[in-house]
Length: 312
Image 1 (tube, rainbow, N blue to C red):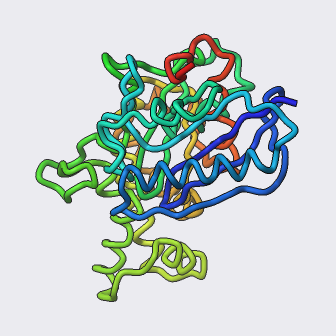
Image 2 (image 1 turned 120 degrees about the vertical axis):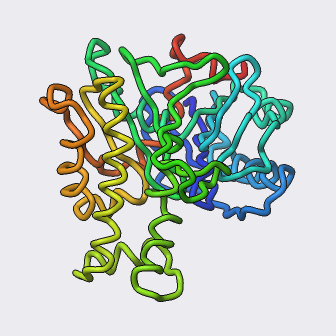
């Protein structure tokens, strides 16, 4: 039996799992995991990724490895798959992780932006004729992917739909990208932590704790997420006016708080998006989005429209 190895680098973790090459279903429930920090070096990340690949291969010694696919928040150059910018792992900037790994493995290796991997999974059963599909990832990084007739939007050097870096406010809060006033600087995990700490005059808490407080009924936590919904409406509303998508799917750890930011986001969208474009538009938080990433990044294999993400 042939299988793929799917690897995700996000939210401080590197996870690897095996998928059946024919069905893209997990071959076993076990997921191998390593953690990383902001100060990791490029060689350190390589060692961790290779360790996970070895663990998965050891578990499947009797099967044929057909491909390895990596997904992370990054701008990847089309012509040679060099990472121009890795938003969680700056040590990867200007490196070609796919090429460097390819020296050790004889199978095709792919690299796919996280939001695009999710979008490919979410639209796998959609007819390609459907209107544009927009995926938005909400976590430490805020990112996006746009599919037009099933194909990702391409820029002049790379896949292009960095939703989190739409500017909402000149000279606003500094974003993780180094610029000011980005959507991510208002709606990402770190922004939520910062606003909650300021509102309650308490030391910063993990964003998961703030979500738990909102679920327990704390008004301050719910207010922070309502504000997040309003900021999302500004950024997403601009995209709706430009692209007129038929569906917008939200993914990422912050979708756990969707019940608390959805009402404010829905109300605020009426102010920023054309009513004609909102009519019939479906916006939803995708269930089991993390499982979708695992299979989504392997959907580039065998798809001629997505070969630019693969080093053969």
